[in-house]
Length: 175
Image (cartoon, rainbow, N blue to C red; front, side, top):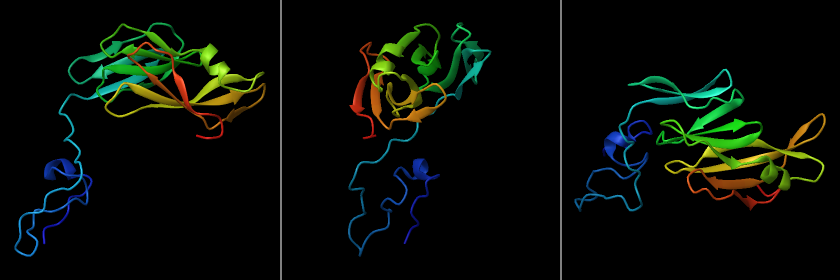
C-alpha cells in the first residue's frame, strides 16, 4: 500500500494531502481522484510587499525594491496571490496599487466605513485579506469611540480591479 501525500508533498504527487494513492485496489483499475484537485502552485519569483517610512514598497528577487506609493501615510500592505496588486491602509481607508507601480485607487473610503457602523462612531478596518487567486478583498470593521475600538463582526467584499463600491455580505454581529 503506497503512502499518501503529505501537505508538503502534494505538488509532487499531483493531488491534495490524503488523496487517493496509485495502488491498485483488489487487482482492479488504478484509483483516480473523485473530487477536484488543486493545481500545482505556479513557479514564479518571490515578491514581498512592505511599508517603509509611510510608503508601500515591493521587493522582487530579480528587481530588488521599488517604491509603489508616496503619500507618507500608508501601512499594513497585503499582496495578492499573483503579486499584481497590493492592498494597504491609508488614513483608515482601504486602498490598492498595482504591483508594477501606478494605479492607486480607493477601495473602501471613510464614507462607506462610517455608513456601516452605529451613528456616532467611526468605522475603521478591523482586518482585511485577499481571496486566493483573485483580486477580491474581504474585510471586517470595528467601531471606534473616544477611548476604545470594538469589532462588530461583519463581513464586506470589494474587487480591487472592478472600480465598483464595496458591499456588505454579513451585517454587524453575523460575521
